[in-house]
Amino acid sequence: MKSLKFLIPLSLFVLLAVFLAVGLRLNPREVPSPLIGKPAPDFTLPTLHQPEATISRKDLLGQVWILNVWASWCVACREEHPAVVEFGRRKIVPIYGLNYKDTRDAGMQWLARLGNPYVASLFDADGKLGIDFGVYGVPETFVIDRQGVIRFKHIGPMTPQILREQIEPLVKSL
Image 1: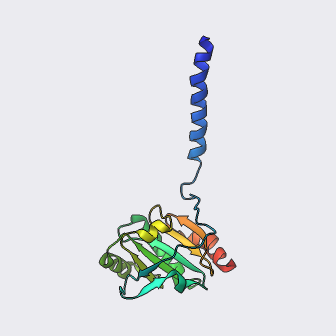
Image 2: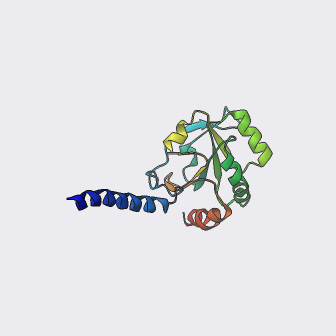
Image 3: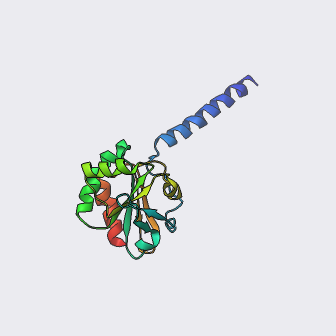
């Protein structure tokens, strides 16, 4: 009977250690999105630079495009921005920004200072569209196909390697 009392806690400890070991090997940037393969959320938002102008999901149908979620207060966005600017210069695919939970002035100043790779930036002051896209935090990037279906989601800063090895081949295949 004494040996059974010892085995139960030991078994629980081993089981927990296995779960911890498996969990530590997972990449937190590879959070599966339930939106992959589904239509992008419907939206109509004002642009950052021209509040009277709006862009909607319907306006973007018929083209492959990238949505890059960013904010002026986001440290990781500053880290990824040079790679996004360089990718935008290559004009492989239109890149739209989603200025997330920011102020209009701060967003415009940030782009003026660091460069603007976007065809336009949508202004999502309250973060509702970000929530509809399932944004966990900024930066996040989505590739959307001609039919308006989300084909790819990347959580965290984009790097030249991710753009070259994942985004560019996907965009060219769509």
